[in-house]
Length: 112
Figure 1 (cartoon, rainbow, N blue to C red):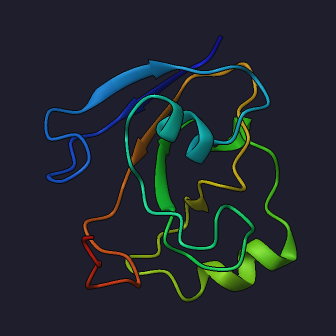
Figure 2: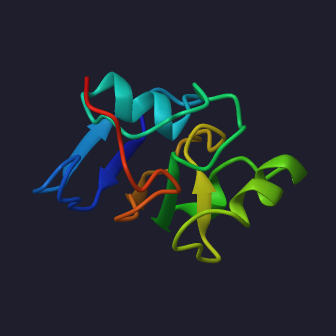
């Protein structure tokens, strides 16, 4: 099983964390299943950019970007060449290192 190393993020995982995930699982699903509440406003339907991550290691092991994801990424805060929507980035056998950007397009969140 591949390991996802999440770099420290002040809100979601202040000390950073490593989690295991099943091959074929999206990064977003793996984070949520392991208690890391990454935003996913469109419920993982590839319709927003709130689950944007930067893949620091293992980028080429993920499935290729499709045109819809590429178009959406243009609107992501902090876009980098190795950015992905975590709901569309599916794990292969290789470990990955991801960074969750400090901000998303949802600057303010509702707390109920």
